[in-house]
Image (cartoon, rainbow, N blue to C red; front, side, top):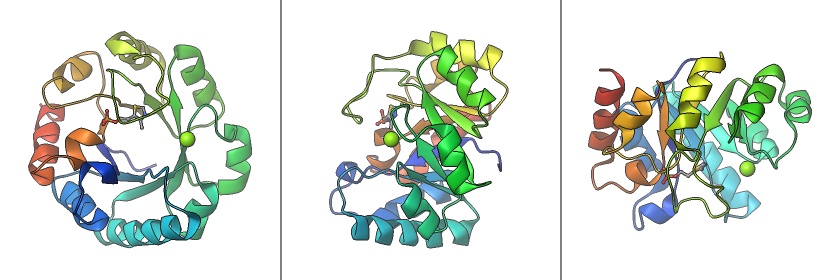
Length: 205
Ligand code: TZP
Ligand code: MG
């Protein structure tokens, strides 16, 4: 897959009154180079419409587009890939359905990370690093210790996620992360573009 540094995930509850596409375009303009549609509430038609709109946007900027959970929507909207949780369709099964599209998978322990790598994941999520209110069914924070462990032992790209803010991202980078992901800190910001730029400045230091 095309490498990336700043992964922005949608979270419409954090920007009431602002359009999804407009907010994500601001993130892209700030340097986000991978976008994920994550939406646990919309029905299928609405979700597909959002996926199509974000596909059009990301194509315009040559930015990678990932759909969370829904393989059928990812395929129908011609996303670049899908993101799976540990409880979703097993990686091996997902691979049969998406061919060479990107598959990302969330991991919370080194055993899960090693297995994902072995089974051909294109990247892994590492988190939640810190406590977060964004994800309802979230497991205990994995802490920066897990980020460090992954940085030492995993060869495929990994992205740190969960409770990452401008004020604590330095800790995550110090633990070995070179790619980070945020929801609320980016899309909930009054200055989405500036927040992305500030994250990238830290990542590029
Ligand atoms: N997966 C692990 S933590 C998380 C997801 C989707 C939510 C991250 O959101 P935030 O607002 O950046 O803490
Ligand atoms: Mg999932």
